[in-house]
Length: 385
Image (cartoon, rainbow, N blue to C red; front, top):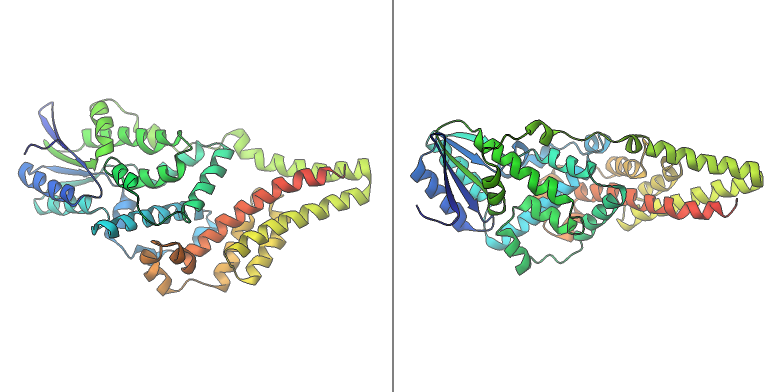
């Protein structure tokens, strides 16, 4: 069938049909079914990775989340990012009365009906997020986290401009671009690298007749790189922290302790004691304020404040993690919170009402305010030198 969103590529005796979809269009889902019925491919490739596929197919997967384990394994930022993306996706689905990822689910369903092999062609979302995070500098990370958190307070209406963007980009990249427009470097890991990954997955898919379903925004990149020799191992590699990244925390801690010692040597014990007191007071205040802003349990606020002077001097600890663990023990998420999660993430009120999302926000906000407190405390204690 002739359609401007359908591209046929003949290569080495194989026929690849590439469908560029608009992720908010029911017509795109219908088009996918029709093309698969006409082509009867050996293989159907979809722009999904296993976690994203399970997320749209198993709507109740959040029930199995061990929130305490997430905090202990320092994965709160990843889970919070995924929930914010899911929030945007669900708002869009409600506005257009479609199932999130409907065109992908229909492609898989129709492919299975005709006996085609199913290939999840996209790079795993965790790798994409970690590569993005590791390639960002410190201030870019602060800016990014601030934009993510502020996005929760933005208008809940999907604008016409966002709708137009959805015709060219998928929910993953749009959600992150929405909070990362000020960080053009994100495009490399979020879009360009995934174009390469998708092109390789589609190009190496088994069978002589292949149908690939991707967001329209990926089509030019896939067409440009299809058939190229692509280093997939490099695209899946999560960069190690550089020397500065691995030891910066320890250097910072030693520098602050060094200031206390220097104050004792140069200005005496009274000055050193004042430096330590002000450090504790400022970091504790900012940390406790972060928990207070999110109406955390009083004991969580206290734990945040008491832990901050210590965690700010230990690179392997964070006040937000302490706050999260204490809040989780005092206000443990119930089954109903997991059941309500898919609806609660569509509104700011729901985000704060649900114990799971509020717990993740407490970890993120307390870490953020404690970091701000640290930078406020440094010039303050230096006045006593």
